[in-house]
Image: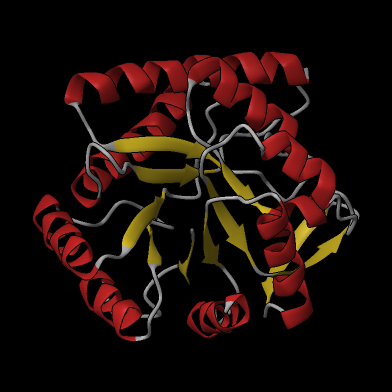
Length: 259
């Protein structure tokens, strides 16, 4: 099954956004905590109930200011708190059988050895998983592939992290393209993703420079078709969250092309 939906509610508010996504015939929506976790537990319960009633799969994008690889322990713990606050809300969106993906950009290399950064982030993920297990939250940590070579999060790092910690991952195919200066390697990517029963995906058009991702763009039909063809070829079960400047319109475009 391939689920499709937008990043955010396009200003409608999350509960109304879920209703609108359902009305439009889409299947998913990502709740955006871009600048902070500003949703009360009561609201999270309301949004979660609406999603379950509507059959809409919710995910959460944790705040952008996160660096689990920081050598400053205060900043690292603050990053963990932003993720865990997202997890607490996400618990009310999921079930024991279908966990809520919690998406986040894990960290930056900042001149450190990549293996060292990997180890720091892995340890931080394990620490958070212990808390999640104690709280019995119905969520899955899903660090995201990132769009700049200066950021932790190429596909190999995340696949390895998933194998070693049992976390999930978020595969942003536009980020992978930007990270590789426009080079698309779908066959290699899909081969690496074959072990996953389900992949949580982000997609959109993308503009890049030699430093990687610059900005998201409207998603072209040819790019959507290419992604769908590869997902079908590998029989991938996936959720595709569109992050273009017009995510609802591009999600509808994707839904139409999948028919």
